Image (tube, rainbow, N blue to C red; front, side):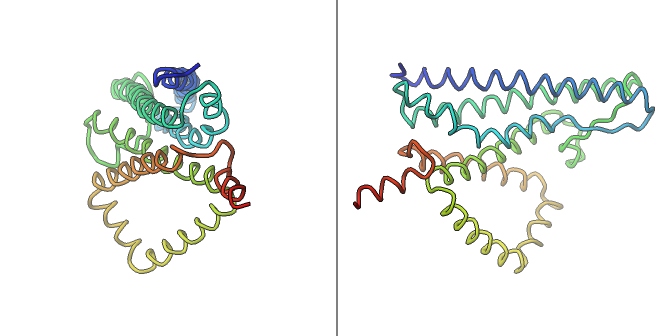
Length: 238
């Protein structure tokens, strides 16, 4: 039974540890495959290995309320314990995964520069036109925080409100964005991306953190089932 924060934290830690082992194994396998292909094809072979890690933090927010959420609550944990342990562990494993990713990238870069490995790896940090490995790692961290935080908010709203109301909200929000984009909003984003890339990246990271915070506020008293909050309201009214 979970009576303290330690229980949910360990559960989420072990869950993410298992997922990380799988994801990093896939990433290493891709790098090995690229290296073999590079030797077979020859020079100027280019690839990217960040897909599995980015893809995981893109999908993971939509898996959270399917299993571990109910499991923690069934063992006596609270929603707040679950949300805090999930957010803290996810940020921790974002740092771990991206650190491992960048170690592989820097190792491949070293081997490539010394003509040992013909593979050239793409990295989002190349947009900064900098050789600072810390900046490369930080860019990965911030972008993964953005992906996880924003999509966690989407899934939290989906779980809290249900499918129909979420779609209505997305339609209204999408309409507002279209109006903003057509009134020079897109031009401002492009200008920020081209001329102030580091600021642009950090704005995305801040949006991810806001998504996590809002998800916590929404789901700290959330329902047990998707859309269950509105079902509870209807039952009370009846």
